[in-house]
Length: 195
Image 1 (cartoon, rainbow, N blue to C red):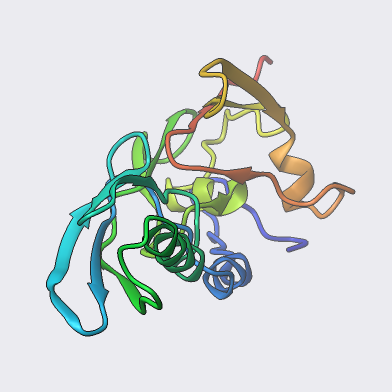
Image 2 (image 1 turned 180 degrees about the horizontal axis):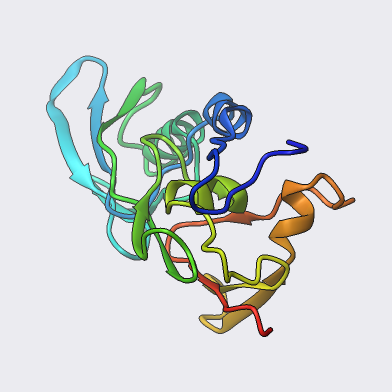
């Protein structure tokens, strides 16, 4: 990525490699995804279920099961195991498919081309910060790209976490660390440079 600038009025680089890497990893189910569930040989149980805000679906004959954060195969195995443990089916064959992906957005504010929300690509639950800033129109001429603030709510504790990220060094290839990853619900703030 050396020599690529993300400032307005210059070329904008979309890091396709990061998106393809994210797409290659198994999609993890997310709150508000709509999933289709079917049990082989049991057509009455086939249904569509929306994953709730706390990551649960209400599975027929089982009740609430937490599946957010699991990939489809792991979620299928969890439901199969629960059917067996509750002695409802002996060898159930569960099929889960995502019928509708939830909207996953990152907010971006401050000295960039277009403030507002950026929607992550379908089947993606993360994006590198350089790509997010690119999609928002890049940095303005007075952006302080070496101290971008990312605010995130910790999913386990509910506490806010703040990260200061030197995006400029990532763009110029000077950063020894991997590109910083942002997630749905994150707020990116690009401050103004002090002259």
